[in-house]
Length: 115
Ligand code: 5GP
Ligand code: ZN
Image (cartoon, rainbow, N blue to C red; front, side):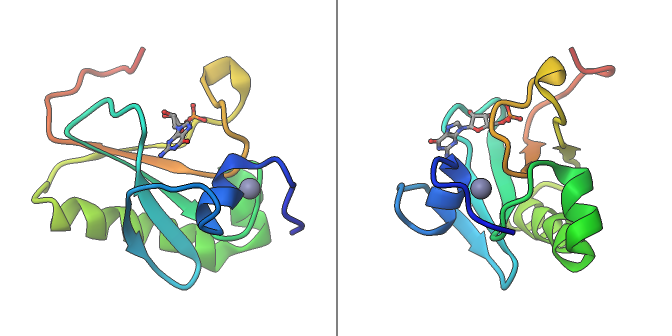
């Protein structure tokens, strides 16, 4: 899929905007969220641009699965057996960057349901 010129996460993947990258694979890049909501708050994104998780799953199922494998690897590397994965989809539930990303959150107690 084409890279929109103004996409923040495409720019992070390309190394044009700095980020604290913690894990890279063929299809995915993981970096720390700039506004961490937990001791571990890492965003895992596909290198290719898709607007949300479902579009990625349709367009590139292998990359979609890789995001989950990377999240598990980062959680393990940071010593967390328990973690939460969130894909916000749509402005109404808080998506603010329209390049697929999962939030990996761990390291503190969490409530359910989320707010
Ligand atoms: P969303 O709200 O779309 O689910 O998540 C976007 C996330 O990107 C937010 O948690 C926000 O803190 C994070 N974010 C926004 N701008 C930057 C940035 O420039 N660098 C990094 N590392 N994270 C960012
Ligand atoms: Zn993008």
